Image 1 (cartoon, one colour):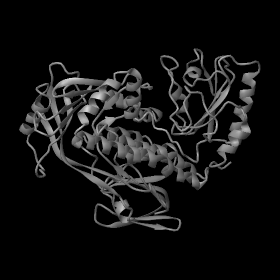
Image 2 (cartoon, helix red, strand yellow):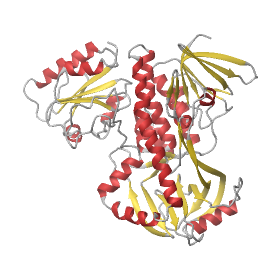
Image 3 (cartoon, helix red, strand yellow):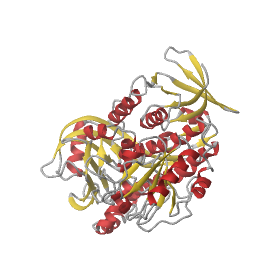
Image 4 (cartoon, one colour):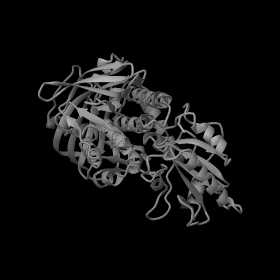
Length: 534
């Protein structure tokens, strides 16, 4: 077979997201998975707000909203009594909630999106070796009939999970540690006389149940009576099986009778491992999702982090493969994603250890409950939990030189969405797989201001054909201007805290790369030619 630009190994959420994005950028590739069929279990269930925004960008958010279950708050209890709540209505997004949906459904919807590009996952194909060469990588694949095939590609994206064969065959270290505590996870049908079914409920106990031991129990709804359950066990020895009756007992004890289990459809033990590769790129191989990092499930960060890995990498890889960017652009994947992932691994690990082993945990929980009662703190916590606060702070492809106002979105942050009317939002203008530039006229444009913006718009289009979509944002209407966004009620200017003219450059992953008050083509071009080929 002829040489491929890219081979994706693993068809979980991360691999499928990578495939959808490469297809959207018109990159030839193959995606293989050793499993004969897609995942059937619930597995990862949390879809964070930032992930919903990504799904919105590729046109599939509504499909998820139709099937998923919205959770508007996270409630904490101690010894069965309500302690505090984190409302999510304060967060800055069109999706102010966490969406619960079984992973099997997430994979099905991503596969459905991939089907639109006439691309299918090749199943029962197992990678058994990967050998890097001077200008690519050769993957040896075992087929369903036992024969082998060599696939030569410029790049391999390893999305094949925590036990990644790609990582192992390429001898890439996966350092980390285990938490010495067994957990149980289950899917159950439950009822409660008063606990809301559109909120997450987490129960802690100081030792009422087990003397000198604190216990954790989480109930995460994905339907009116359908729940994912998590609990630590404090067992003297590891166990592999549990009965529905034991689940019912744990629920009754840990929730102090707040829930009654009607049925249990699935039970599994699990242990927490915190591991992260030192480098998410090794030559022609990229590691994404669980192949690159695993950690505590606290906060439902795992699957979402992998999806964001793919979203960050795909557009960069596409530009390089198309010959539109310098290969050095790919170095930014490690430089941007590793600090984010490292922080998540560390924070979830520290939080889990604190809940399990820190004798001062309940004192800290009490202080937290008082602080989160303030709307500003609740918003900050919610933004971090839902991954909306992620900022790339030291990237070679982001210009940090010019300071924004205190209320403006910053370089390295996600570009915030803005609702324009009942049917339109700002993100509608970004669904083009290109860089997008917002040229702000200011709230009260000067005479000939629009003409100046049109001239700049044309220069950008001529200098970077097919790479950048430039939108003029103005409070004054003009039907003659192409790619014009009427900011009739100044909603965009207000959200971006822009009073006068300004430029915002937004990458294909909706990250702000450049900001300037100056309508200066020279400065913008100087920045872009660092990684874009003209």
